[in-house]
Image (tube, rainbow, N blue to C red; front, side, top):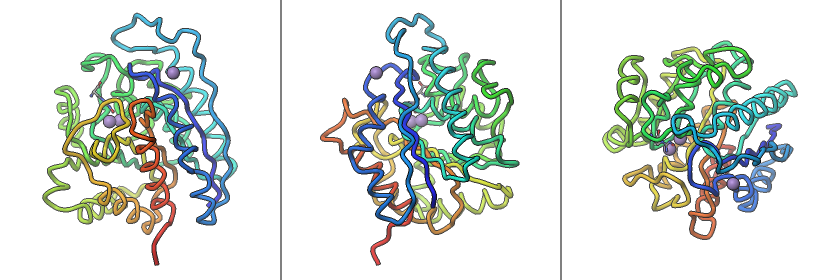
Length: 298
Ligand code: DIR
Ligand code: MN
Ligand code: MN
Ligand code: MN
């Protein structure tokens, strides 16, 4: 692949500082070299610049740091579009999960029928009305479906970015009441930990991929929140939830995606080295990138 890596050192979407160091942590863990070793042509595009002027001064408890999230999303959307127009594969390193608003804004206008795999302990489908926290990292999927604050929903001047029926959520185990209602209302495809336990990851991934093929998607974005894994493996995240996806199940999922050739863009988010144990979470993120981009033992 011809890939472009975009860092988004942003922590405005939630209230634990340090996730802005995620891109550095993943680079330090060898992300670029790992992908180059697989024969990919990797261009590190550096980081999106983030204005820290008002960090810590926000008083909006419904939508924390809204102006900063809007500004960063817009810049990221521009960058992702530029990478696509150069026919390169966008790989985005976060940053908290609110950056997905920008990634999807940059991607979706280049596809007729974009699919999304959302690998996460959470559904990220809150709006300012339903959010228990006011943290925008709990909202990007709702925003991308066209629900939420006008300015977030309309980044890059169009909405929605994705259709609810083109989204598959994998690993959910902490879902807020408003999110649950929305999942039901939209009839969304969700594989919670219950399905992963019951069916096994092989069956879950096969069903997820066939679901998206049946939707006739012309691209699939993988949005991987490291808190989708069990905190045993990825402790360096802001909102850990026990009972998560294992290290091996996650590698299997990435390997299956690799051999499917479905994935056309990806992002790895919520790596917070301040909360981590010796950069373990970034190491896992980079190992998963290895599997997603073609590593195999024999
Ligand atoms: C929670 C946490 N549902 C919220 N969301 C997180 O604040 O909306 N998403 N951590 O990754
Ligand atoms: Mn910071
Ligand atoms: Mn998330
Ligand atoms: Mn999450």
